[in-house]
Length: 287
Image (cartoon, rainbow, N blue to C red; front, side):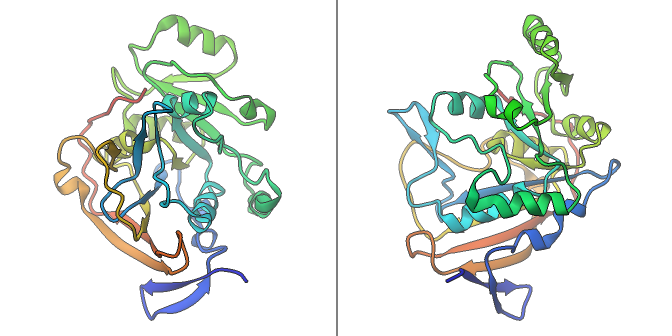
């Protein structure tokens, strides 16, 4: 039986199918070249863990019991609406090492074929472009990108290794500068808008979320809150830098409840909009 969730806010409460929940929000029609739409999605525990350190893999992983098929379906519905996916070198290195799955394509499995069909029916390119934000340019590019004909761009800094910049450009990649020593959110979003990419989905973790927030460039935050405490000493949270102050104010615009997952604990699907973004011109290191 198809999973159903409970829409809590805005009211009145009512049941609805999980499938199609985020597609119905019409992100693919939002954003312009003068006002790009940047959105992010995280899953967190009740004690704020988004990842834990795995000493064996020497990598950060999603805590067991935090993820679910229901949450992943909604993640994919957000991904399907993007002009481009913003990732980083750390993710690509983890994919190459076999620590993380390559999830940079839309609708390539039988179970997600409907998302590829939806994307084409909505007038979008078959696959979103991929933007790698990296100061060091130390990453391999997965073969899947060329196999699926995806446009690849690389956002780096003025002090990036010149030889590596030249190498990537010689391979035909669009390499552009988005900051002096740090990849900066505002500069990155503007560079993408100049290239006609106005809907950017952040898949680059906490540092990219933080630089977008500090630049006043984040449009929307989707947050899955699993009803579970994780604990542990080696963990990661959504924000790790200096206090955000007023820049961190968020307004709840939608809340849904899934009672069935993960592992029967339940989870909230929340949507937030930043309040009165105030650009500060700060960036954060992205490797």
